Image (cartoon, rainbow, N blue to C red; front, side, top):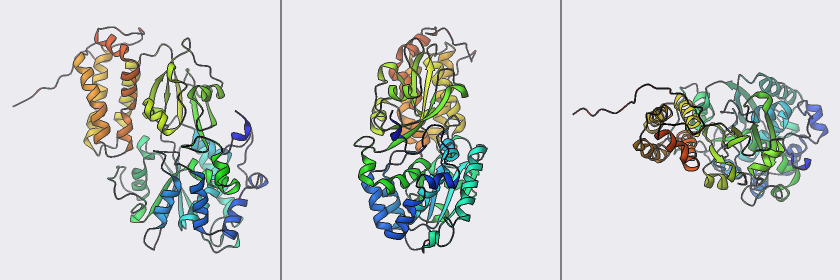
Length: 439
């Protein structure tokens, strides 16, 4: 891919972590111009013209979320930059903060100015020590140079950012759960409505935006909304960071890339220097732990919210994982479902109980104790859990099973017949669990 497509990470090998390096590349120029020559509505209009969609969830338009927050009753409003990387294998937010933290800070200030917000939180994983250190250093530099605090760049706009490093598992990155964590409450997903834009942090209007979404704000203000739209697809403009994990699954086989929306899964893998074929891979998981497993015949699927959803996958955490050719998809679905069953916050029954039932049924199949009735049950769970769950975690937790059954049905049939299709599975149970009805 041409280097000019890199909007967030800069050139390969380049670090913009220091304020001086960032400013040499034009950093904070867009902010100064916005505070000097524009009003909040004009900044919001530029973001709307760019068609910027949220990078961390369902792809909601960022301008709409900021506008909803701005229309709240007079009083405190908050901005939360979600840089948590819920999937531990994802390195997108971590890499962005290590290489270009001031881009995130400038984006947060611009978003705050557009929505009338004066107080923000940078929410990130505390265990990512290099990213935390880079973010804290950048915040100090910005504060010292008058880019944060009272009267930013000699304007009348005040803005503060507090870094909050937490470590609360996969659910720690879910929108309503992270608000509860910042309040000092137990990690539990919350019913919506009311949405955070109406009643979020401390009951006040709150815009929760992914770190990548906010990092695009200075790019839009510097280039203009229409120029931003020139990259990507008609539905989704701009670029996306992806963490690509090779078949070995090791850290040495993991890299972060930046691609424009609309490139195919295959093209993204090639940019990461991975050539996938039947001799090396069984499937590619798109979306991380809650993503869908696509067969090799689906690798020309464009990377965009709607096209991935139609294929059964999600953009999700932005992880592309290549599964080795010897992978049994029943065993893979069992491992992922078991992990997700342990990560649920436990608040709603469909997710808390449903995922445990799914993991248990898959354990039976892997142990050659399953029946065709189990396959019917699992298909029902792919609908019930998604339809009944309280938050996006439960809605998407069923994606691994659903795509494994959709594209690799023969693996499930083989296990019902008492054999593993790849010869790699070992029993994990000695007895079949059945439900006993007591009158």
